[in-house]
Length: 56
Image (cartoon, rainbow, N blue to C red; front, top):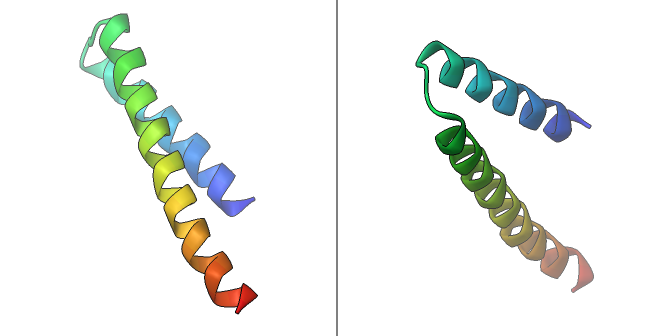
């Protein structure tokens, strides 16, 4: 639940920052998508490492 809250706050902060910088909507979606994909990749790679330690 903590990671979900942190992710939501991160995306909210990015959106506010983009609005302050008057960044175009296309760039906002692109950057938010990249952040989500990178976060999912980190979570997946980190999750595999944890599973292999506990299953042995």
